Length: 193
Image (cartoon, rainbow, N blue to C red):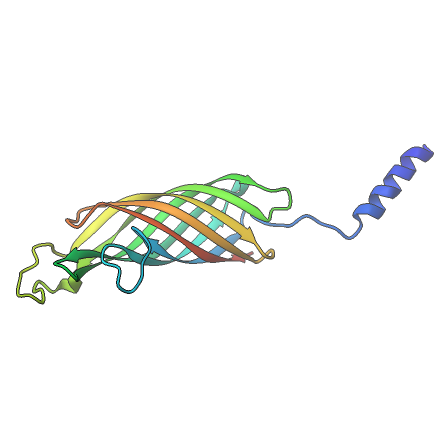
């Protein structure tokens, strides 16, 4: 009996005042702001890649899985001539599910894999059919639909703020400028209870 009391007292002294993080619990939600590169590394003079921005709202389910809803903007460029490029912009809304794969014991690091459906609008050269050299552009603006598969890692700084890193493959149809875009980027996630 004395031995059991000693063990309990030692455990209380060792773990007093400590608590595990209360993260990713069912019913919690989050707002995430993302930015990234698309189809390569974008610089101001890149001719065949682009960038993306997005904002998403997530609701945590059991096992830290999440439903996610949001919108995004993707701009890429198509090379034209020797030095020119044609901008292609996509405005999309999406809904998806993210499956929690793994996390560490302290709930500081999480990895998710997800799928999402998306739909929106694509504009080519901002609707201008005339190119600077007098040529006529045959690609037009269109409504688009498709989906994405993604892999994301979350690094929690506190119970309320996490830094995210993600890579995703996006596929869209209904357009004539290309169906697949690889995106990678970072974001900040704010947890709402």
